[in-house]
Figure (tube, rainbow, N blue to C red):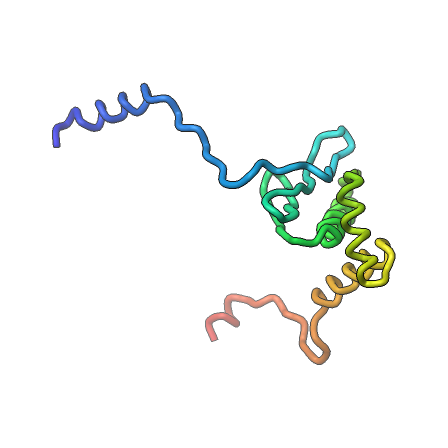
Length: 145
């Protein structure tokens, strides 16, 4: 290999046009938005390829078939932001609300009751099982023994 080959290869790469990013699937159809006090979007939810996607900071953080679960996740994100002193507002489309309401009605609940049930389930998963000791911070000495 010659000494000039790397320089020529680098020069050729600079001249080549950038390859476009190829996305798989359909584009996300936005249905909900989390906006900060200045009105900038910090997250939201949308529909793509038969699933609801929750997006925070430009990254998909959750996928589900359930519109109600998507609303529950978004409401939880609002609560987390408010607890951190960074209030956000949640707005969502009528179609997202209608689909979530249908899911709740199929279970014989109102949307608010169903969202509260989902929140209660989330809280029960976060709690330690009865009789389990809380995790204590380990020290270097603990790891050595």
